Image (cartoon, rainbow over all chains, first blue to last red; front, side):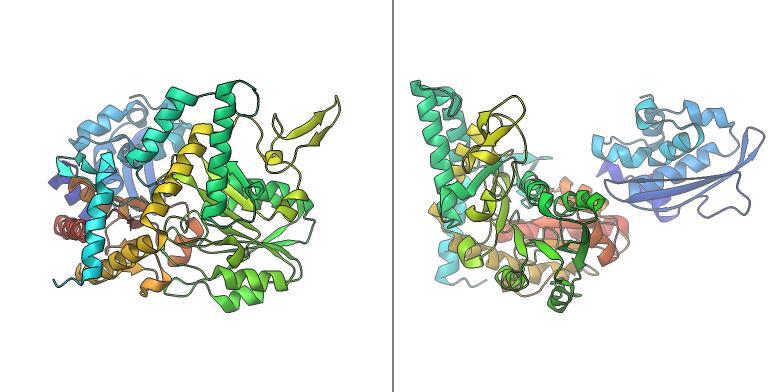
Length: 127
Length: 415
């Protein structure tokens, strides 16, 4: 039951930064073919700084809650910060143990950004 | 609950069957395993595990290629397995039984070898409830101008027969349709489909992956031209499956893969083909797998396919009474036990299938979640995914109760 810790359910039921931007600098979309999870993340950059970030999507609690948490963490950060984020960072952010199959759900948001911004593949993700 | 003597006997029978499956006494997450993922793969009884073990310990050798004692014995056992398969589905001859890796390979074989005969403008008739393995191989024929048609389904998950009649054209050269849906559990009227196909001059392939575990199969009565199935969904090993085809049709088809076994004579620039069924079995086959499948067939016959269906119908009745009590649940597929098998796809409102399966897992309940390799069907149902509980002959009402309890918990966590 730890997978559905209170903070995860809270982010799933009340996603933060949910919606679309009027004039986004970039829109990045990806899906997880395994379960049909989808997210679309939009960025508003001022220089290298993430001035605003929103997301929309549908899918399981893990994919949506993680993306919600990620947007909170990224707002105000420099874009390079996204590049350096690792699987371990996501696990620490969630604070739960997670199996290999659901890990794909947890990484969807980060992967969408890293792939969209720099063409990084899942294999490039540092663990 | 009152139980008649028939169901009481079945009940005794089921506990006997359960004892044959070592894995069913294992615990998962500290809970007794409730294995409801049989449409993905069933478990194996000790008899099948031992048959494979004993082959490798005592008889292991390659088939056809040696005159030494072990090779003779391995060949004998391998061919005995073929005969068992032929009898099990009432094929006219063991020559009509081709061993393949599984249903997927069987369909690919037909799409390739029979597909070679098709020309631009020819059509293949499929349905919205096909597994990707009965869609993608046919899409390979697009490049030569062959078109695909899809028969729609009704709201309760049956084939729209009027759609079948409508789409069957003079250009339709082969119908390839599932006997039982891996998502909806629907049993399709394949004999009727075969009759109509033949009237229009088309062949028909029946995907039997999900029907062979549950129903008595008689390919002559069904009058299908091809019937494909996998060993691992019927208590047998993975990596072994069967393509049945009428001998006269196989004779007109070229081999699928090149290699040993399939040839009569190899010259430098061409070869001539071996007799049936060897023409389609390139390379060293899965010998232990075939022997394991033969043993699985012995096992199923000992229980009796009629009894398996009887148990199945009882489970369907019980599940279709218990599941709707989980408020808000959306169940897919027909209500009448005669029209379906014990495979139940469902969704809970606003809860993703993966979350349902993860919480069920905490109860030791193994169910599947996702698109079940049936994305056209998911789109047709208008859902990204479903959860699926697929039961089989060793499952019980008590396990359905545990499953229902896990679904109540899912709702509690998410509401």
